[in-house]
Image 1: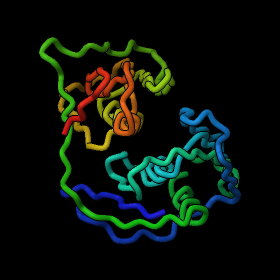
Image 2: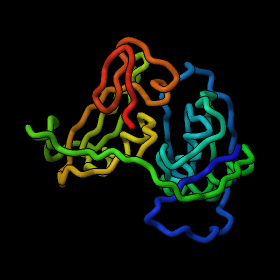
Image 3: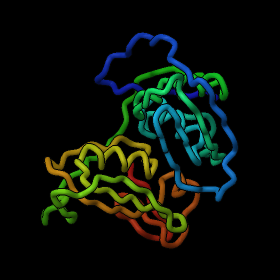
Image 4: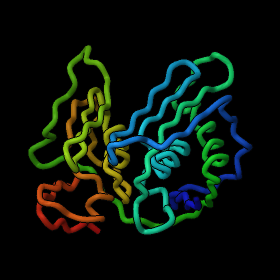
Amino acid sequence: WLFVLLVPAALPQTSVPPVPPAFEVASIRPNPGPRREIQGFYSSGPKLRMIAWNVISLVMEAYDLSDHEVVYPGAVYPLEMYDIEAKAEGEVPHTRPEFRPMLQSLLTERFQLKYHREMRRLPVYFLTVGKNGPTFQESRPGSNRHAKVGLEGRKYILDLSLSPMEALVKNITSTFFVKQPVLDKTGLTGVYDIKLTATPEFMLLDSNEPGDIDIFGLESENIARPV
């Protein structure tokens, strides 16, 4: 697999990092389905389980990238899903960011991942507040934080609690596979309960069906993509 990892024009390219650490043991198996099963990321101590991830989403997780920061080979989004079970060396618990360098090693070893970095100028979306204010509510004190993704036919349902705008922007791009950067221009500084239902962008680009919902509010039999 050959990928291009895009570097924002405002940031300088960094030097090549040292070889990242690797998992002590790891297995990768094809996910049995359904074909578009929702991804799952579960960790306990030094152990990691990832359910229903394709190669592109694995690259995004390993390098902490959004969909618009990865250019993949071919015109068709690969739908082959994999399940990963892995364990880091020792018994020390690991956070999600600490697992990422190990995933980088796993991708290089098992998928023969190759990539290069380059800068490109891209159009962007601005997330702003409408004239009547936000339609979602601030989270109540004492609420439990969560970020859940559900499936309803071709639509994904993103359910966030205690979410700042920064997390909302990141979840929009990762959950609905938006190919252009989304920037927060709301000026909102609180945390909110937010629920979004939309059809992932790669499905819209592949084919439109009645009832498809674009994340940017378009719903029709033929969705014209924003440019």
